[in-house]
Length: 617
Image (cartoon, rainbow, N blue to C red; front, top):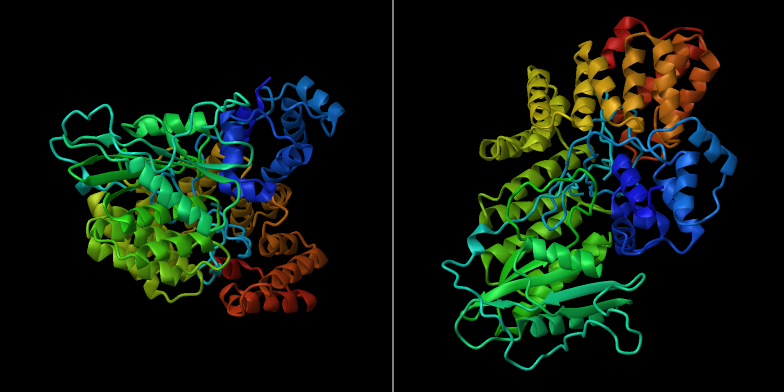
């Protein structure tokens, strides 16, 4: 029988739900989810937590009960679990491994913008932003989840509900030391400002360098001294500044401890994080009075499928002068902002990054980094502001003109702003930014995908051909990506290219439990006047996600099947959903057209001839 940690990892990878998003749904800290996945905490303490996990990951009844059994809780339906086992489900628990993991991101634009509209039944899915820090992302992105519009030329989803976040790793290539000698083995010669925690507590015998249940532990490693001069207590000074900011923020169950040995590279940092269950690790080196600092956080923990695009081993690099308390406070605020960002507390993260910028960092690279991080949290959350994020990314570019992450993120923010009711010229700007990125990084699959989506939305003469070329290029670089097949399938529906069926079938093979793929199949078959083929996919989309918005597609299908009253009910449900959105959504998302369909059906007419269906592509 698989362990709880193994099952949780498999189910989360299949669903594409991020640690942060699952933590918010269950009501625990993100680090608790990380510890469950790593096996650092063998089991949840409460049965309700396991049921909440199962509900958020949309597990089947046998999968839910297998998860309960793995931690020793009574299953909800013991007879059903036995029947499933006797039927010979796949593997031990019926988990079907996804051929490729969903990528956010969503963001978060995050993986989580609660309060934004539900996805359209066949919305395109850009990979939105690169929240540069130790996440392996989404956009993600940033800013998880899923769908942006649009299945027809006039249809846009306001609020860009749930874009997948692609977080790119930040690499500060210019900050590396030149001709570094072998570090001295004992970097700290001065008195310790923050006492180094002993490996175990004398009273309890428990390690004090392991995060407790629901505790946030921040570690600062002893710094390597590459100079020949006397060592400095860099770890102590950083810890002191970090603790001061934590106290000022009145954070509960948050602790700072010093890791008692130097960390030399990213692998060492990852090992320390895994061993301790810490939320972050500050580590680095110094030479001639200057300090290079890295802030590491648990690996690819923000969501399955988010990739590290740049190759630098450091998660975040900045230079501070160890003689200036202002600089250590700047580092502490940056660390705290990262922590808030990981926990989905975007308002607090914005405050921390703004306060760090108010300290006026001397280094242009540090200033660029802070504007970048501020931008990634400005576009996330219920009050996400893509216009403000664009402004911050635009401040990064003069400071670091060749930084691919900033251009890619700004292009994604332009797309997000367009989906929030912006003007079409935002698509021109997005296409320009993605083109700039691809000139420098021609293997970047997600930039091809997002540029293809921008062409699709702009829909000028020749744009659909450009979109097809870009999505095909993305597929050549990511041949197992369900998301690329999904997006190209929607594009081919608009192009009236029969290949849409093949693309969406391949997407479904790679992610069979993903409701938007069924929504897209419902839409495509409806436009091809094959209602018998469409109906099961409409129903499956609702079965997988009761909040899925397929009411307009399902209304067309029912009308084609001669079920007039059912069609009218679905169209009324669609209009009810539209009225929950900002006022401009009614016109942008075909509200008047749906009202005309209702009038026609009530008059006994059939509004869906081939010409009318072709206009919906």
